[in-house]
Length: 43
Image: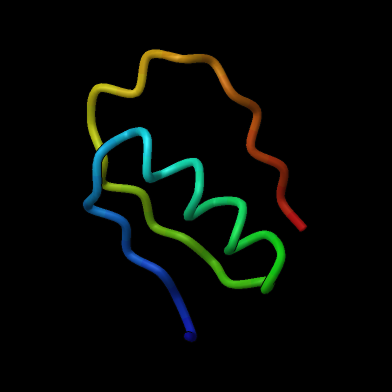
């Protein structure tokens, strides 16, 4: 895909980020209620 737009639940967001990082696909995150601290690294 050219871009991923994520409207999923927080638990799924982190799996989507793993996939996007692996495939070098930009992500727009629209998920709310993410309380767990995570660092997202740009490629």
